[in-house]
Amino acid sequence: MTNNRRYLVVFGLAVFVAGFTAGTFWQPDVVQAQTDGKVFELRTYTTMEGRLPNLEARFRDHTMAIFNRHNMDNVGYWVPQEIPNQLIYIIAHDSREAATDNWQSFRNDAFWPGIAEASGVGRVNVESVFMEATDYSPLK
Image (cartoon, rainbow, N blue to C red; front, top):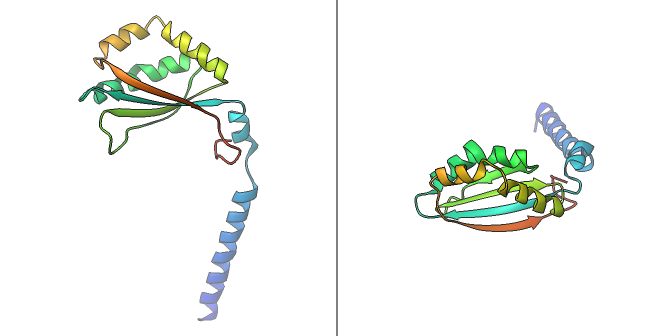
């Protein structure tokens, strides 16, 4: 191996080790402050066949904004590749008690019944799981 090549290999390894070390030991406090005490809710909606596009439009055009109005933070939305007619999403609440209040407020929203009816989604099976971030989670 030539001296130039040996230098590049050693330099590249040093840069990798420095970056890995910095990333391992330096965790910004800003991320920690954003999730302290929050509870995350994983929700899975299964629609009738062919109604997923309607459900996605309802979330995209209306539901996410209503969630925001009622103190629910939109974290992410997914559609499984192997499971048809399913939408999976995560929202965050300030606490489990806040989640109960947020959902009640959502159900009482004056616009929600009309939006739900007009969307053409029909019956949806809903599963909900409440979670808290672990101490090793990038969210924590």
